[in-house]
Image (cartoon, rainbow, N blue to C red; front, side, top):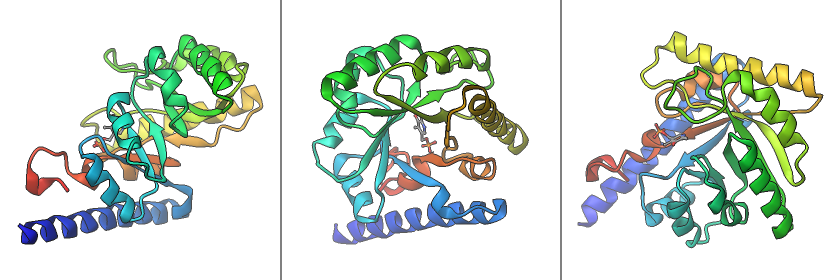
Length: 240
Ligand SMILES: *Cc1c(COP(=O)(O)O)cnc(C)c1O
């Protein structure tokens, strides 16, 4: 049994090192510094105990897409920054704003209203990214590019919300060309929004296991990596 535990531990170390190395290489290709790119370890495939092991390996920013699961992991009291990266229902906002550093999925005025109301009650502020459905896929969350200005103008007026930038999810199975086009489009959206609203929107949350290197080359400041760091949890030897 302990052989198996050792094997899993070394697999875990190797995965984390490999992802960090790939981030560094992508930064080098793009002429960027690795410190400009934050690795958000998406922990949705792994348990609370395994999440703690990632903390021991130096990961300090973690992402979850479901409040029920995040709440359980927060109870482990790891001193990490949590990023809420999934669809957010307004009835979860009260708890979420007390627990996370960033919400990556701000996609409607009603959610902005709820966030603003709850942060004021809690006496905190929340950093939020506007989620954009760059390619307009029908099943995907996020505002379409033509809805951005309306939402951004609204959110900028809400007390307690610091809009930090934008988030997108790349198209699954996209070619390098298409993936990079999506990410560079988000960067252009950001540049245009900064100019139009005279605000700084530095964060671009884009890139997952399948496409994080391309996202970095297109300007990502946060990559949300799950499977490549943790395995997908489907079989023991493939997970950490
Ligand atoms: C699951 C998830 C990720 C991580 O996906 P991987 O492909 O496992 O790296 C990133 N962002 C969001 C919004 C997710 O739901």
